Image 1: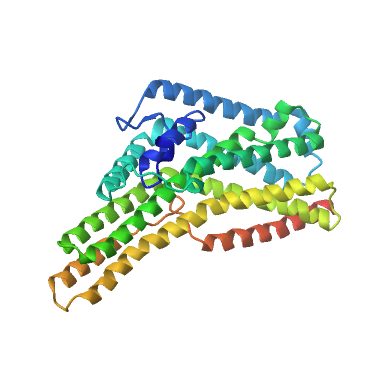
Image 2: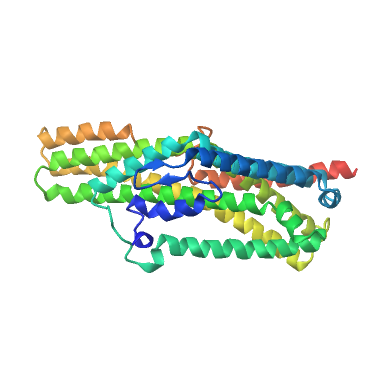
Length: 378
């Protein structure tokens, strides 16, 4: 039954958590008791994973074979390569630290709030009727695409560097990249959960219009709206810095792949067809990851704004000065304070406008890299 649950019931995420416990993207959490379990063992396991991540980064920056290959790159390419790998390691370490030491209680707040809203909206136990929209089917397909891309990338990188399979997996940061992928999955799952609840609240606003005790039911929906807004604030606290680092990583990778392809086009670099396709595939992958965060967040924010718009429109159905008009005006003023605002650790708001900013910055950085390499060559 658990695999068939709709995202409208937060318990659907239970089995995803079990899987994400392996790389410690999420804490060891008991959904039945709504609390973490075996915290000491989890912290010891987390320290082991952190040590392993640091050792891999150390090996990556000191491996003689890898360094010999990197010396053939331009100074700007070496810089983006180094920053990209450092950022991936930071994303992985921060996810482990937050799961083991920092954010366990915040997960409890999120699940408690969403379960309360599920009960209020009668969503507990609701199943997904359309097989094609099943969360775990989509997750499985994403995994297939990811590992297929990893295999192709390993093959291309192995041909370029003549490294062993183990060395290639470390050089390409397969584990860290997979952790970033899983982090995007859990962020997307939570954002989709927020969106589905805002949709349900908006539907209820319209349906209660013809029911008795309309004002009381609108007030209950406003309470659900407030709780969702507060839950989004907790979400921002938990994932804000990871989102900042991921945005920086997306920018670095897009700049690096665009620069490599442009160098080939203008005759400054060498690459066979497989290498070009690999670079283009990496650029598409990073763009898809970037959009997997930005677009759902934008849609969720857009859906949340409809609630306040509906409260305004409902005033047209009642006479001026009536009890309902006064109640709706108070609810509008109240709800505005809890409209969700997704942000990256307070540095920027997450919306579709950031897509244009990232692409423009990537283009400008490619031009700067050409200029730096030109000055280095002369």
